[in-house]
Image 1 (cartoon, rainbow, N blue to C red):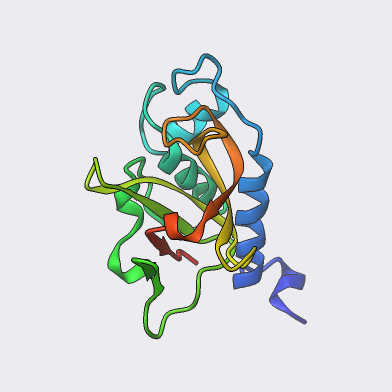
Image 2: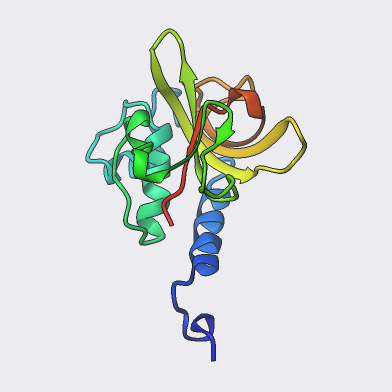
Length: 167
């Protein structure tokens, strides 16, 4: 009998948990537009932060915490890309690393910040040759890193600077 029959945490089962968790949050919005509201505050609490902080990375932390995945608990976007977890950088998959796929964490680099300034989840890397589907927190219809909700987005692959895998 397979581990799934026993509810074991196989890679596929873990991925399903992660995907179910982040997709369950699509449509969550801030209460007043000031990084607040019950769900946003729950995301931030996982990182030990009160309402009012930017929360895209806290959303990623919350999903992994709820899925019981050993990962960092950080609202600081760059911290989601330690070398040991990075599988894609500067527009290329790294040698001997898997291609990005559903449930991986992506980062967008901002020149004005000189760092990764926004993170979210890859939902479909192979949507098209040039486009990836994501689910991300603290964004809006325009794709801002200071938005107000959890949204499914269609982004150009060229916007994705780095991708990390945590399970």
